[in-house]
Image 1 (cartoon, helix red, strand yellow):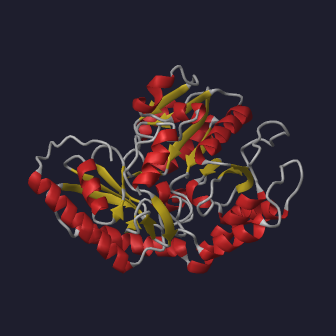
Image 2 (cartoon, rainbow, N blue to C red):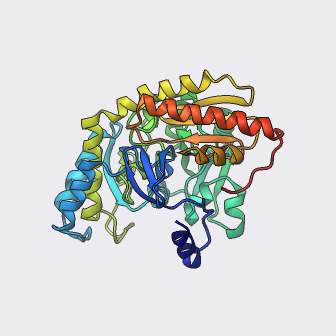
Image 3 (cartoon, rainbow, N blue to C red):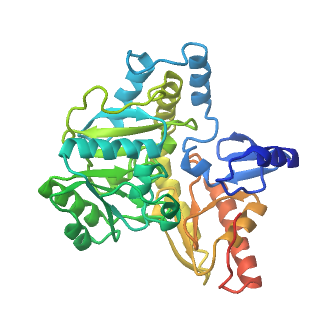
Length: 400
């Protein structure tokens, strides 16, 4: 493993904090490092491997398409693109009738922001505190955390932020200059904070009344992660633009935007992407959605997610402030720094992520079993007990 670490460190850009583990294989909920050590992956590659690592149906689709056609630009039609778009529209909330295909969640958010400005003729955008929408310039402008933004200022003008779940502040922020409101139905990076259903419904109403479009960022919450196909469905809210990424491609890079009837017809040249709608990626995404349906992964996420949260709450440790989330998007808020606990958890065979300084975030593949949940809970239990017994609660965290 050390050879891989040294080789990558010589040439990597430096923009990623690295953990000293080299993953080389995955299957279902488990991954293996270069030394053959096995882990339960409760990060799923930032919530990408929702259907599990190397799902056989997705692998077979990629193999078949790789020897059929790899490149086909959007100025011609393609069978896999057509099939994927039709399938996406069938699972999106009713009213989202068109689809734009791209390569990542950040690209999807960039496209949605452009479509909103174009459709309304307005320039301002309202986003939320603790929101995260990506690192490209428009998506970064919508993101709240100054740590990500400050080195690149000035960013795109016209963005303002209000407290999440505060409808009064949102109402004051939406004006006749507002092109769109962009928010997450569950804030991921911001601490695994679900939106109050009344808040989402209120924002929808305000956008309708004031001529703004509603963009819901489902990049992390989409594709069964929260126990519904999309998290906004828990509130029965249909956005004008719904952005997707991560779990869409079954492990390969893909993003998309679901487009509603309030968005104007988009003319050729309005936007574009060289690799958007690539037939290889479309074949993988189509097979991925089929795998969700065959394995009933959306329903499974709701069921196993409830069990997971019940098990975590039953730990009843004084250092745990809260356990929250929807489906298999779970946050454990602690009264201490999370990094030392994450290190201990990984040392005992579970890969997880932070969501801020004190929240342990769990995004396992939706194929995780109750037995595997029990393993993870036991590891977290022992890690929390060990770290909080030997360190004061003011422990300062570091990088993994």
